Length: 203
Image (cartoon, rainbow, N blue to C red; front, top):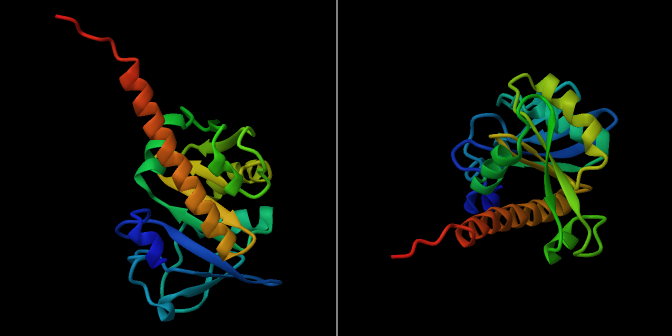
């Protein structure tokens, strides 16, 4: 978590991370809500059950635990990482739906796409779903569930940030690094295109 914090992807108390401890019954190891993810010690981590209730540890579970659980249940992920990077937040707003629909961020022709599980060529297009934000995490999780099977191991919440997952923590971290690279590259590409297409002023 400290390494992710140092990248500027979960400043302040932003972001959250979970790992599956067991599947039957489902339990997750998580950082508690409202803590600095760059300094939280292992002893401060909490264990939550499949309903999102804390069953071990003293901290409070984040409301976003419900979305972590939905992703784990729908994809059989072993870890889920949630970040609040500048690029993720910016592009989630740019491509987010006007209301409760689904926006799409389309990416292709980038070699780094091959870091996503199941992508074997730079020419393959992936679509990252972008959901409207919602403080009702049950509603948000319900809207996310049908999108997870086809999502490229990641999704965006408008004005909020990025969720990625993997079969274990190592794969989830790889997916996080790949998605964050792609998001950073995409907004820079949009900026470059805007500069190149700007009308030229002549004296």
